Image (cartoon, rainbow, N blue to C red; front, side, top):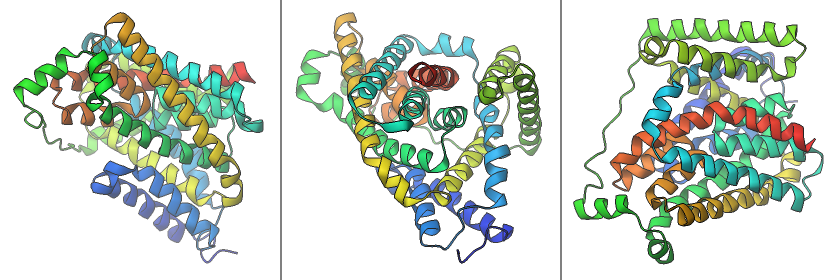
Length: 378
């Protein structure tokens, strides 16, 4: 019996929103440069529930799991204008495709080599989606393949540490002697000459407009409602999230000018996602978590290492600039925002827009690839 019972809606809601706030706070402070706020949200949530401060089950969790998180997907994809993505991504899009192939290769090789148990096909699909797209894709595919909260927590917990290591490797690659000698980079040479490492940073302040946010919410709920109706109608309700993704991307490309003007919808989607991560931590049983976490960490590291090998080999063969290779690889592993921050800190201003555009494209395609791979391995 927990100190806070599941039916105490206000108390449970306060805990969930506190954890979400803590995650955002960590992401925007020095600690967030070392580890993701998501890791802290889930870890502290696990501590709260397993030490019986909070319940494992609550109607609050049910609302988040059933309604809020699926609503976040359209909010995060409303600006997925494919024409703009392909126009602005340049050669980095080629690198992203190579990186995605590297992820798929790593997923399959690791699946064949390691004993992942019954959750193997689920984890393969979820890791494929997460390392081609991002946390949103990680969640979406986990729902489509029927992962339990505990399985999800173990998977994303192990994956988060892998992503941190991957990020550190990405940041270190340009400084490694053997890499610099074998992978020439015009972009890096120009950055070193100009010394503009920090001159191109711009402080981004999110603009919030209530009319935009409520309109985006209305459209998002409508898309989810329509997707649920269609998926049930044709007997594919388990793939409802894929229909949400498809319909959202279709609308985003039919109305790019209108949706491109929205302010605050992405931030709102991120709030919903962080509420979901808090719920996952609070619902996780530590015993089952540790049964899976170590082997999943090894699996994730295999995927990342194989992806790096594939990308660097392709860069060598096809003479891809090292900065472009790192940008495409990073857009797959850690997503557009973090990759844009990395390339900006390196003094590669021409790589910022491709990092964002290719990362968004990863969001678009990752759900379909992840579900397809789980289906194949099952």
